[in-house]
Image (cartoon, rainbow, N blue to C red):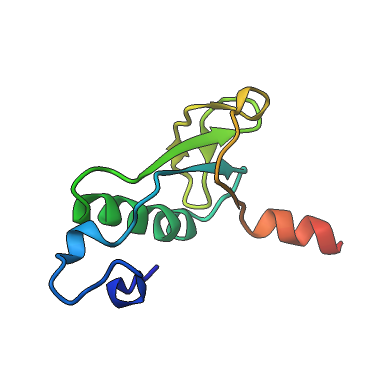
Length: 109
């Protein structure tokens, strides 16, 4: 994810980049499915963390959930803890579903 501060209407050439990247707080939900690819998940969540460090205060928050609230075993056999289950999820600005090859292969067979 790349945020160009020059594309912001508040950019005047003298405003520090730290204050113009994001103005509105946003919440993301990551739904991890069994076999989710850890690299894809990391590539999606890490830019949010970095952007939070570039702003004066955090502008992104996220929750990681699974269907039943249990840890999800990712494609690299690492069990990833989650914040809760799908049924208890509150509304969010964005929902990202992280699956792995199994979800795709099951769909085409």
